[in-house]
Length: 254
Image (cartoon, rainbow, N blue to C red; front, side):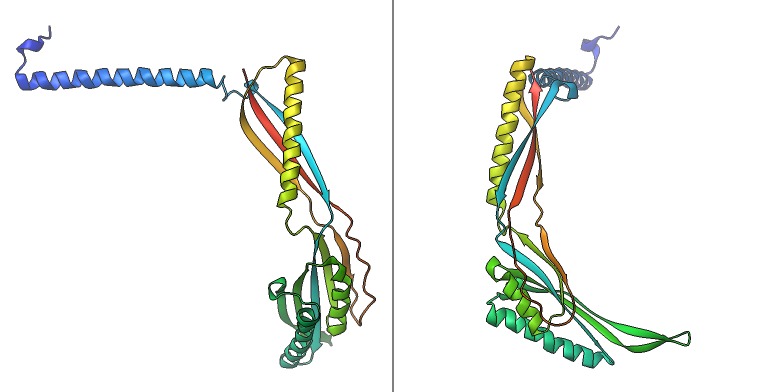
């Protein structure tokens, strides 16, 4: 039989330390189990999906777009690359000068998004023969006064642009409207939660999850002005744009 008192003092201290560590381990292990049990009780089994319930809400806000974005292009062809680039630069500089001087478009609202020079080949007697070069340059222009959109497009073509790839209308600062739509969506989801809990006899606990989705893309109202000469300025009808926010609120069940 093990006799602690017969052990040397050094060994007694070692055995005592082992027993103390073992006792502390058991105490902390028991405490940890108690904390986990308490959290599980407090959360009413939040990890169990069958003990949560979700409600959706939708908020909508309509507003007229206040800004336009136009992609203006210039396609230049010629026999040699230097001539093509010089001719293209002269025409595009005239377009940009018109936008800045005549229409007062800020530098930050004019951006070159494409500049590509490529060879052009003709097929002669089954062989590919270099016949010239094609330079395609596109700039994106932001117009912050919708009344001037038609004038900007017409003037850009008159100044040398021979492509208008697309024009889109959008809200420059939609965050305030998104917040209003979000507020309406959350209110609707909460009302559903209250009504459903009364009808179904549910006891809702705390909110444990929130998610949302957003939609409201700017509509394209004008595309692909044909190459060759100025055309009458198009009539711009901004209409209204709908911003929609969908939210989902998830609650624990008591």
